[in-house]
Length: 300
Image 1: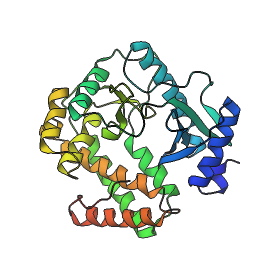
Image 2 (image 1 turned 90 degrees about the vertical axis):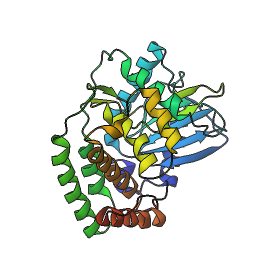
Image 3 (image 1 turned 135 degrees about the horizontal axis):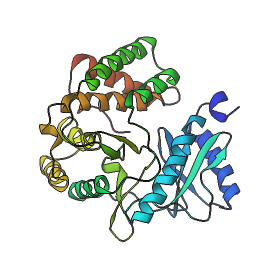
Image 4 (image 1 turned 60 degrees about the vertical axis):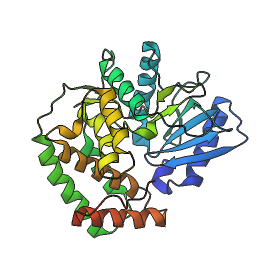
């Protein structure tokens, strides 16, 4: 029985798993700090010298193994991305939870510029595909898995499930403008950080898949026009860096709605242990129902 099957995956549970994994690889941290809790718990160890990712469920193991393969592929290609801590065989598995250890990039989170993001994404999409296989992008699988486990109101769960079914039908009808290929899968400003030398690097490599390239462009666009987290000039710099503006594509609003659904269900995973997250989920669902502004969504 794994930890995730008999206890909540909260800070205390994730930290316990992390400390066990540290002992297995010979790390003896003086300090650990949780950065965020979602599909993984992400920890900064000893002022950011090492960053660790602890998988929420045992079913994360295949994607984490793929993440390790992706990291090695990108390293061999000389692409600027997160690097594994080399002294450990990875992933480490504790009570079924996969744990990985990464080189820290800098003190704190220093985000790349949107132009750097666009250039890095164009460069990533331009790489020759890896020799190992990547799964097809299946965004609605995550929605289903999250809703099965989320501690939320039955009415909320039913609404989100119905919305997912509706959007899945629309998604299947989309005609994409860009050629398909390998994807980062979760490309946004939070996943492109400057290292200690001031150079941008791409992190969070576990979502790599094969599918429409528009998927990697959508978050930066919606962070601008739905949430106001980027300025108009910043978004223009991103589109210029990538050499394509996904907001001008006919399927943009459908893909944006799919991403919004994923944002809500991602947060719903924490509703059972975090009252603030539970409240935010209900607020977000109300805006989805009413068509209201997303600018009141609080970042998590």
